[in-house]
Image (cartoon, rainbow, N blue to C red; front, side):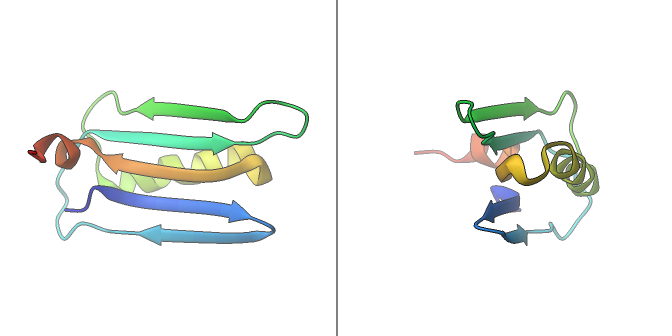
Length: 90
């Protein structure tokens, strides 16, 4: 499974989206990070950790909800698989 499962960016009128769908329907701890830029305000970084293990489909639904909520002010959105990150040893 990938460390990043969903990535969305919006810059200069261009929207890009990358998805790394896992090969199975495992549940994992997810962290959603949003980067929001509203004119006249400071840039905001919003972190939303999952309250329970989530599926890939649930993560996509959350991403779509946040894209609608913030619209063009949402400059980037990344969903991290925290289980994979925590399993990396150095």
